[in-house]
Image (tube, rainbow, N blue to C red; front, side, top):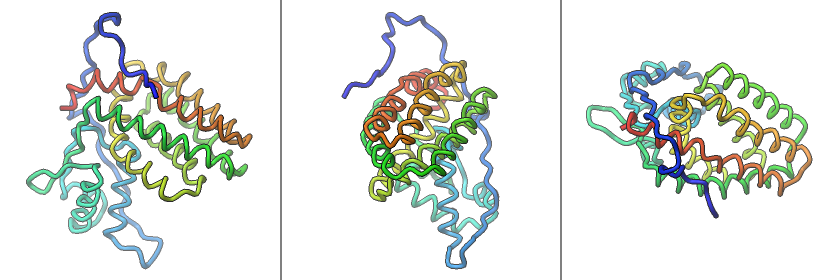
Length: 258
C-alpha cells in the first residue's frame, strides 16, 4: 500500500510553519455529568465524557490537563476523573505527568503515518460491512452531518468540524455491527483525533483545502452506502483517509506543539 506521504522539499516552495501557540488552544468545555441510568457510575461517565472529548478533537497534541480543572468542568470530584485519566493513559490518549496532571502525546510524523495505514485498512473494512446494513434513516443522518461539516469549514469552525467528522465516521462504523473492529478503530482515533484537530486549525487555508477534497469523498461514500455498494464504500473511505493534507499540515505546525 502506498501513501502520499509528504511533499518533496526541493520542489515545494519554502514557507514558514504556521505558529499555533499553546495558550491559543481552545479551552475544554464539557457539560456537567448526568446519568440516564441508575446503574451507571460517575467514574464510567467521566471516562466516557473524556474519551468523547478526545475523539471529537477537543484536545491538541501537547495539551496539558489537570485533575482539578477537569473535575471542575465535569462538575464532579477528582476521584472519578483520576480513574478516567488512568484508563485513557493506558489506551494512549494521554501521558501521565507529575502534580496530578496529564498531557496529550505529541506524535512523530512516522507514528502518524503508521496509525493512518492501520486506519485505512480497518475503516475501509468497516465501511464495506456497513453498506450491507444501511437504512434510510442512517443515510439521512449522514447527509445532515455532511452538510453541517461543509458549513463548519465555511465558517472556519474547525473544532466543530472535527467533532462532526467523528460523528459521521462512527455512525457508519457502528452500523457495520462489528464490535471487535469498532474497538480497534476507536483505539486508533483516540491517538489520531488530536492530530487532526491541530492540523486543521494550523492550516491557513483549511477551508479551501479540505472542502472540495474531503467532503467530495464523504458525498461519494454516502452514495455508495445508499446503493449498498460495499466495494465502492471501501474505496471512498480509503481515498478520504489517504488525502495528504492532514499529515502535511501537521508536519508544518509540529514545532508549535512541542
